[in-house]
Every structure is written in structure tokens, then in C-alpha cells.
Length: 371
Ligand SMILES: Nc1ncnc2c1ncn2[C@@H]1O[C@H](COP(=O)(O)OP(=O)(O)O)[C@@H](O)[C@H]1O
Ligand SMILES: [Mg+2]
Image (cartoon, rainbow, N blue to C red; front, top):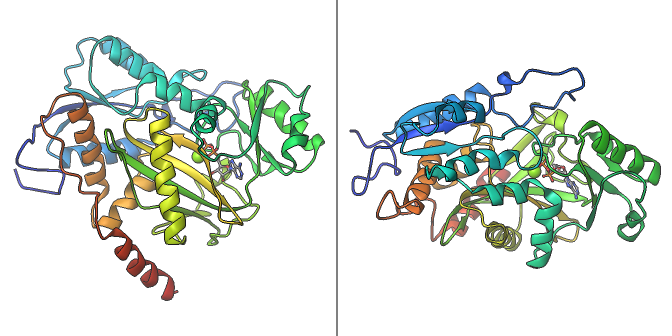
């Protein structure tokens, strides 16, 4: 077979049959009281096409499994060597754990974190307890199951942001989620607890800038180049933040390399690896940060199931190494295959560059002086 990228390495290459487990937005049947963003975290059919293409380019065979119901119907005879799981699952804070737990029951190898890590990170309140225990800076916060006792807000101080405790993709977050007084706080907590039927996470609002850092690896996880969030062409977000209506709009752009000092970028990369280890993440993950006006980074959350769409970060950081989305996807697969004992030697990491800081500076200049 023709060598197509760094992920295809002669020595140690094995062709794998890969089962893709995913939830499609188009599979969701809207019920009467569903909020508009109810299926926000599910994938677009295009993402499944992109992943299939990438894995096939890596020399593998792809079998599409689909969601947890389809997995259950086919188990135990899946006829695959390994499952690439990006399933969001259905219902409650253990939903992302459903596929990994079933695969563990049948001893089927899979890409990504196990059910415990996916459950504990989906509940942001629980994940933040790990961060605090491990001395990882995260905005001050408290969790409310209803709007009866919100006095802790005084200890933190307004403005605050009210989020759903166990959702992603800015689900449940709107322009009204940043609150400046008790009346607005109560309104948002009622919305989260009643419409989204889960506790609300109330957090100190961090005015400033926003970044996200992918991490790849197992024994020695490696942080990828820092990617910055820009809104309406501006990286100085101040009081702006990323809410659901922006997810599919062109108001949000990613900037890589980030417009951040070398020191801040390094701090975030080191923190991203600590967060990854703190929650027992495997193979891949992505850590979201806000940085305040004094330059202090705060970890918002870790996503062990980051979006693998071409529009997202896994299509951006590879470019900093002269690599592609397919290289990233196939390298993640190799990490999982080695962790599961399917390949003897790990693939050498194509996402490691000893002179990455120099390269960053050069590109930084290039991209920002030309505007
Ligand atoms: N404490 C905070 N201060 C400022 N903005 C925040 C804060 N928490 C969240 N946000 C904004 O809301 C977005 C979504 O929050 P996040 O905690 O990453 O949840 P998710 O991405 O799972 O929906 C962030 O990308 C950021 O723009
Ligand atoms: Mg996030």
C-alpha cells in the first residue's frame, strides 16, 4: 500500500477493523418539551464521513456501528478489532459512560477514556473537585439543585455564569447565562434545573481571553499547540463568551498559534497535562481555559470526547506540525491500540517537535504582521 502519511508506518503496522460508535443529530426525534439544543452534542453525518475517510486513509477498514442501541443489538459479535467511540449516549450524567461500560463487559478494546472518566468529567461539579484536590486553578463555584439557597453567590461575587452541570457544546448556555444580580441568577438556575432537569453550576465569571488545548497520549501525555478562541474577529473577549447560538455560526473562529505569550502558552500546556492525569484520561482529550486580565489561566473543563469534526481543534493543531486531521485520528488510534496490547510498540509521536517554540514564534509573526 502507498504510504500516505506519518501514521502509516511500515514497521509494526497492522490493518485493523474499526467499529465507529457515534450518535447522529439526525437520529434525534424531538419531543414536545425538548429545548432547541437538546441534540447539540450529537455529531453531524459529515463528521462520521470525515473520520471514516481518515481511518481508511490510514489503511484500516471501517464498520459503522452507530449509537448505543445499535451496539447492544450487535454485541457480542461486532466483528471488529477495536471500537472508535465518540458516542454521547442518552440520559443523565452517565450517558457518555454507556458505550465504554458495555465494551468493557465484553472485553472489546476501544479508543478513548473509560466509563469512570467520562462520567466524572461530564459532571463539571464533580470534575472540579478533582481539579481543586490536585491544586489546578479553576473558577470558584458552587452547585445548586434549585434556586432556594443561592447565598454562596455573595462569597464569590457577581458577575457569575450559570451553566448546566452535565452537558457540553455550550448546551443550556445563552447570552443570559452571565448574571449580575440575584434576580437574574435565580432566573437562570430555575431554567437549568427545570428545563434541563439537572443541577446548575454557578461559577465566577472570568473576564478575559479563552483557549483550548488538546492532549494526546497515555504514559506520557503531550499537550498540543494552544488554540485560541476568537469571537467576531476579536480575541480579547472581555465579557463575551461562547454560547449555544454561536456553535454553528461563523462568529466563532479558532486562532492557532494562539496570540499568547510563550510563558502563558507553556503554563496552559502544563496545566492541560495535569488535568488529563487528574481525571485519568486516555488517548485523547481537550482542556478549555479562560485567562483573566492579569494573565491567570483557569481550567473550565476537560473533554475526553472532544469534537472530531473538521471544523474543530483536531483539524487545526496538526497544521502546526505540517500534519493533517487524518494523521491526528490515526495517531490516536495507534495510542489506543498500543494501550490495549494490540501493537507491540507505540507509534513514534509525529506531534512532538523539539524546536516547536521557535516554530511558533516564526508563524506567530507571519500570521499577525500581515493583517
Ligand atoms: N467561568 C467562566 N467565565 C467566563 N466564561 C465562561 C465560564 N465558564 C464557561 N464560560 C463560557 O461558556 C463556554 C462553555 O463553557 P464550558 O464550561 O466550556 O462548557 P461546555 O463547553 O461543556 O458547554 C466557554 O467556552 C466560555 O466561553
Ligand atoms: Mg467547553
